[in-house]
Amino acid sequence: MQVPFHAFIVHFPIALTFVLPLLILVFAFMIKSHKMSHQTWLIIIGLQLATTVTGYIALDSGEDEE
Image (cartoon, rainbow, N blue to C red; front, top):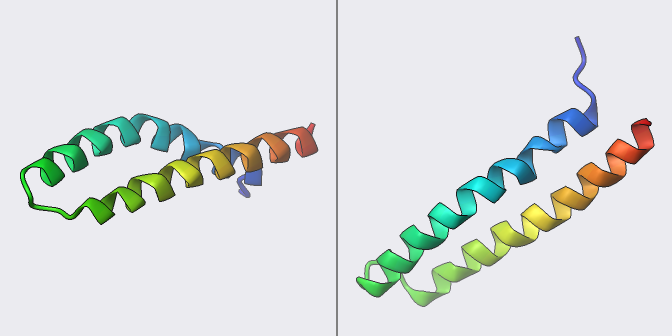
């Protein structure tokens, strides 16, 4: 059984949408308590960029499969 590309890729941005707010809160707390450097915000920025890019890829792949 082969899973279509769209069905596989569409869940990644959905999962990140729910996980990112929690990660932002954890990172903010860790940075404020000086357990992480301010540069760790780059991880959040990268994940937000990945959410956006994979969202557009999922949209495009869904239109291709119609």
